[in-house]
Image (cartoon, rainbow, N blue to C red; front, side, top):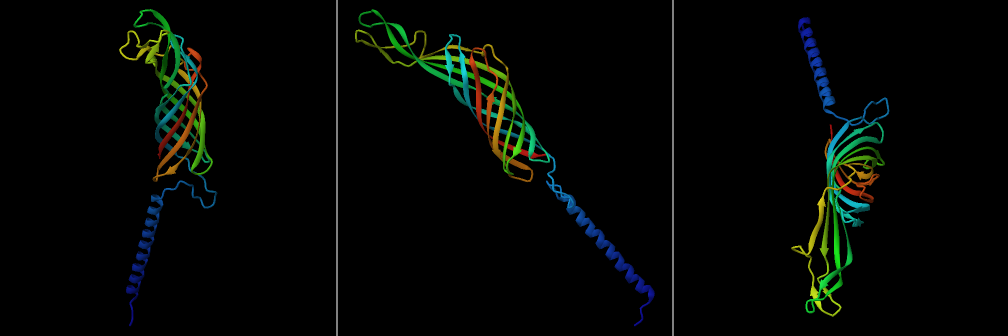
Amino acid sequence: MIVSPRFNNAICSSSMRHRVLLLFAMAAIGGSCGFAQTNVLDSDPLGPRRLLVYDQYGAFGGLSNNQQGGTFLTDCNCSFGSGAKTGLTAGIMFERLTRSRITWGATLAFENRSIDARYQEIEGVVQRAPSSGREYTVPITFRHIGEMSLSYLTLTPFAKYHLLEWLYVRGGPAISYIMSSNIRHTKELVSDSVIFPTGEVASVSLPGADGRSVVLEDHAVPELNSLQISISAAVGTEFRVGKKVFLSPLVQYILPLTTVTARGDGFSVRALQFLVEARVIM
């Protein structure tokens, strides 16, 4: 069988077109795979692998165990110390990763730094005996409750260092502004009855009060230092829960360097906070 040159050229041309189309298809598939892949590491085969720099934004919230430092005074010069209370903390945050184990960032938090302090004292109060009508000074036990309500807006720039891939420590200065404050002093009657020197027993009550307690003062904190400076230190873990999402439980301690009010002796509020952060790679 004799094949004409024209037919042979047509076969070669068709084969060449199929090869060219196959090369374009392979290139297109390879290119689409390359564009679909997202790496967190620099994949230069000729150089060392390096972490890429990217940003994370997130939010956090949790509980704050507030502890009083020093003492504060009320209008009657009653001194309160050793107060404590649990409050809430929530806010937003930003992190910038670097090409090392160090991460830079900042948080902006709303913090409830309220505390309650109390003590008991025995006062000699003049009471009238029911049967004889004579007046005696008898001991009566009272409880004083001092409530200091403080709301902070706190900016904390920090440096974060990864000890392990999932474990880190961080720290930085905390700059706070006290948005609102209030002090409330309540006096409660603890004793239910008194015993007179004659042996008589009588019930007791607070004059001018409907129940067993009376509010002696309730107003804004006097001589307030609105600007507060503290040191913040934290340790935490982080877990990837999605392609771009991280969860991070942490424990944070805030040590104040300034006092809240001049009405007292070195009064401040330190905090041990138990938080959970959620961050997204942007």
